[in-house]
Each structure stands twice: as C-alpha cells, then as structure tokens.
Amino acid sequence: MSTPAGPTPNARPSWALDAENLDAAMSEVPLFMKELPTEENDTLAALQSLVYDGTPEEIAENFKNQGNEAYGRGRAGFADAIKFYTQALDVECQDQKLNEACFANRAAVNLELQNYGKVLKDCAKCLGLNDKNVKALYRSAKALFALDRLDEALDCCDHALAVDPENKAVIQERERCQKRIDLIAEKKRKEEEKKRKEKEKKEKIDKMVKERKIKFEVTDETVAKTAQIQLDEETNTLSWPVFFLYPEYKESDYIQAFNETNTFQDHLEVMFEQPAPWDAKQEYTMDNIEIYFENTSGLRPTLVKIGKKLQLGKILSLDKYKIINGVASFIILSKTNPFKEEFLGRYKK
Image (cartoon, rainbow, N blue to C red; front, side):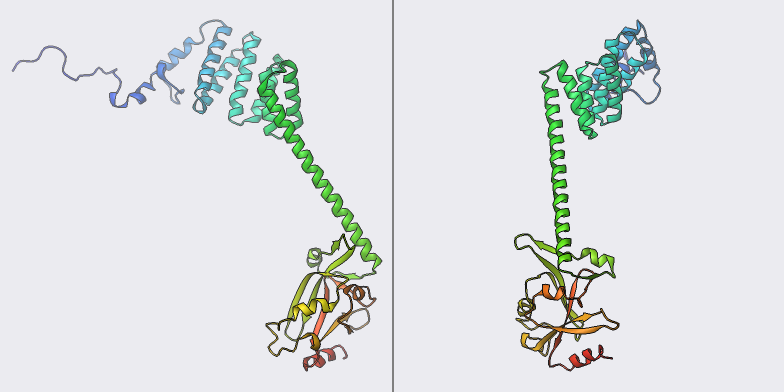
C-alpha cells in the first residue's frame, strides 16, 4: 500500500486553537482578552511591557483609553476600568487635564459600584486640579445625595451650574436634591407640630385633672404608662379608662373611654342589656346590682356605695377616691346574692 503524499488528513498544528471551544480559547489570546487574567501570562506580560514605551503622557493616555473601553463594556468591565485609570494616574504625567479626566472617570466607575467614599475622594482630587470640572461636581453631588448629605450635594450642583448653567443632568440632580430637602423639611415640620400639639394637649389634661382635684396612686409603672386619659376638644371634657370588677365570678369589663359626664347607668344599661355569659343565674341586671369603690384613705380600706345615676366625674373628684395606675375601678355586686354580704363583711372585720 502506498503512502499518500502531502499532510496527514485532519492533522492540526500544536499552536492551533481548539475549534470546539473557540470562545474560551480566544479569551486566552491577549489580543482578544476581555478581562485581565488572574494567572501569569507570558505573552500578555510581553505585550504589557510595550505600553510603557513612549512619554509619560502617551503611556497615561493609553491606559486612560483602555479604561474607557473597559468602562464601555458595562459592569463586567468596571474592575478593569478602575485598574487602567489607576495605572494612568500612577504614571504621574505632567498633563493635568489628562490626570483630571482619569480622576473623574474613575469616580464615574465607583459611582456605578456605589463606592461613594471613593467617588468623593477622586472628585476632590479632580477639583483640586480644576475646581470648575462639571463632571466631578456632578458626580460629587450624586454621591453626596446617596449619603443623605443633601446640603453639600445642592452646593455642588450650584457650583456646576455656575460653570454650565444649561447642563440638563445637573439641573435635574439639583431638582432632585431640592425636592428631597423640601420633603425632609416638611416631614420635620409636621413632626414638630405633632409634638407641640401633644405637649399642649398633655399640659391641658394635667391642668384639667388638677382643677378637678383627682388623686392618683401608682403601684405599677408599666400599667400606668399604658392608661390613656383622652381629651374631647369639642366638649372640653375628659374620658377615662375604667374597670368594672365582679369579684363573685372573678370577671371584669374594661371601658377604654368613659366620659366624665356620662353616668354609670349609661354604660351599665348597654352592658347588661343581655345577660353576661358568666351570669348563669341572671342576677346581674340593672335593677339588681349595686356599685361600690374601695376607699383606702383611712387606716383600713372600706367600701363606699355610689348611685347609678351619678356622673363619673363627680365620683373621681371625691376626697375618698383614688385612681390606681391610671385606671378607675368599681366593684359590681348583686343585691340578692349571698355573696354580697360575705364580700362586704370582709371590709368590716
């Protein structure tokens, strides 16, 4: 059998790219690299050494252009863009406009990455070279806005507009800053107004309580703080939290706002319109109940009976009555149940 002349079919040179993974193979070739490699690459190192040929200005310009190209690729190229702008600045060329551009461009990348502290540092260096650089002022304003340093952001916008009054991006940023400042100021004004009204209301309530000579005793600070006295501005009256206690069944009813002008009958008629679930004998009706409060002003506590048609405010102002932990309490007993005499007897011993 004769040997065919020429190269062996399908034979590929050792330097040929892998046809099945062409994209991956090309990404290792310096000319086609989209990102700098993490490992050493001799060919790339040789090519990189060429970028330092020329004057410092030419070298810095080359790095700046590479940074611009990397930035143009979007987020995937941001890290490389920062490296190239940094390399351009490390050359320390004497072209101040070139350095100014690199600081401003690196600030733009860090603004995208939300590295606001680095944005402000680079913008400050840029403005140190040219205090009228509108891009640096604009990017400073955006970083300061993100950091909620709104007055400084507004100041940067004003300086930028002094240089370029028609700059639409700066005008929009200034409007955004002013809107945010106005919003915060309005919110603060409303909060202060609310606090002022709450303070005035509390002072008025305290004055009204003092005028009524109502007495308090606090044994539980937590409970006392949650008890709220409500002021009706239209009628200039107070409403109180009130407990009705039923010791026979160890039950209670809580009224959150019992107006001082209402009588006990006003509330009890509604409460006992239907028998309470615990009142199996149906002995707690309007005609068959009595109301008492505990008098602790003497050496020994006693019970004081009060009429159903009395207003709450009249009772709270009595010398013998004391509100405990901010909540007024009253004891309800059935007239006909033997428990009444037993309970009253405990206060006579």
